[in-house]
Amino acid sequence: MTACGNLQHVRELIEKACARSGRSPAEVILLGASKTVPPERIKEFYECGLKTFGENRVQEFTTKYEALRRLDIDWHFIGRLQTNKVKYLMGKVSLIHSVDRKSLADEIEKRAQRAGLIQRVLLEVNVGGEETKGGVAPGELPELFSYVKGLPSLKVEGLMTIPPYREDPEEVRPFFSELRELKRRLEEEFGTTLKHLSMGMSHDFEVAIEEGATIVRVGTLLFGERA
Ligand SMILES: *Cc1c(COP(=O)(O)O)cnc(C)c1O
Image (cartoon, rainbow, N blue to C red; front, side):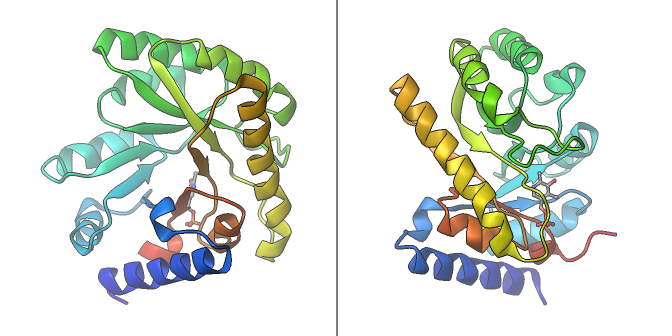
């Protein structure tokens, strides 16, 4: 299928999931998870109307950012982030999805302050307790949230998760509802509101939307299988 055809298809699935759950498609941001996708292909999707893209690796992001500078892309960073790479993202990504420890938050604070900007972030939560994945443990989330909330150059806008893979997306639903519940509890405990739940990928984003996702990160279904 063509880029525009794929995009149209995914948008229709988003609309249907929204209709099933009484939500407006305007509440759901489609992020193209574009790791391994070359700049020319990203540009095709951009021209079809996709404006938000997320990258996983700093070096790969930097190359694409330069190649696509002239386009008004809203870049996000969605991968695991080493503190020594934070500086390369400043002023280039609107949202970092993967803050999962104080040392990383401290580094973002330092670099954002130096650049004179406020960096929007999400806290990544490891809802499946998988050792191979990043993210703060649910039990440690309130403390991390409280800490990051106190940093003047960071703005915490919500939570992100990469749940365990399950063949049947219905089996992922409890992880999505857990993330929603964690957000609700933070809002209650800290008397605040959080805008985003970044959850759902190609094979489970429809379930994620039913459970309240505001950002879905879709790669394969838009761009095709990764090499
Ligand atoms: C690759 C990736 C995605 C998209 O995965 P697909 O299954 O290809 O849709 C979403 N989120 C993160 C963090 C990723 O690394």
